[in-house]
Length: 179
Image (cartoon, rainbow, N blue to C red; front, side):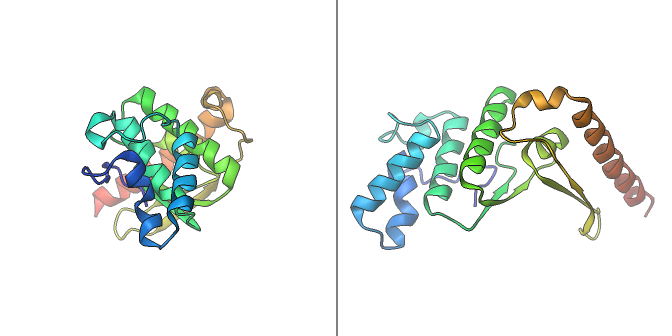
């Protein structure tokens, strides 16, 4: 699970944060080191292994949280607005990083966001929820090719899908306001 806020242990280094779950599962120190080194490198943090979270930017902290989650080899990766607190440039880089990781591993990812562009860019399927009670109102397939690049946002197909989702959400908001 990766949350919007940086849920790292502030008293542990980046490497120790990534190794935490592995240690708790009883993995050997050598295997912990190998897995943590792999995922730290994969998220672009090689050279920062011995830094503490307070010494890193928000994007670097979030990459550490993603590396920690992936190092445990989950069947399902849950992300709750993981890029919501990041500036736009870092957010775009993190989206592309996560997509690259997904494209390599093909793990199941449940990604919660309120950002329509982000939902379309990141997803293969987008679920729109009703206001109250929270139920899936509609599910829309997203069929852009992989590897996916940020330039997909400039296509007419992306714009059409964004307009459709915006209308779905607007209609739900209006119906909710009437009750």
